Image 1 (cartoon, rainbow, N blue to C red):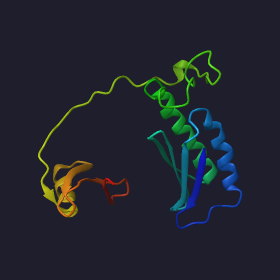
Image 2: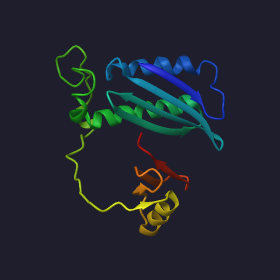
Image 3: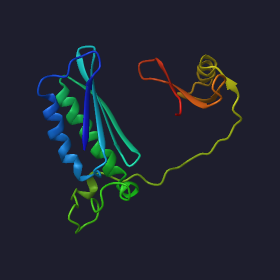
Length: 178
């Protein structure tokens, strides 16, 4: 797995790269050889913040953790991603490394079955609506009026479908397709 580590407004601590690469090796059992991991560290108040994103065959696994040390945050993030994988193992079995969930195979990983209950089928409600061209600011206003956490709209400048959303810290984000 290719691992990239960057610091956002902070330096990557000496020896942290080696720790991350060593801990990430345990997770090679889940992913095919093309997997990439990105670790971004930053400061949030008096705590260390770590964002871990793993990409493999077009699937993204992401966890953001805050703790007193980057190493503790890394452990929590890796644990969260492993939980995501085990929770969705049936859906992911075709995309992840072959045999990782098949008993008797060379790469099988045994876990207590009752520890993680797999999610049932998704209950999806379908909704359709006409997209009205509007600015980001207008979309944010509309999202706030509807008291939603996100809003899909057609950008009046690019005529592309965009999504604005409210972040945990109260700021807003915009997703723009490439």
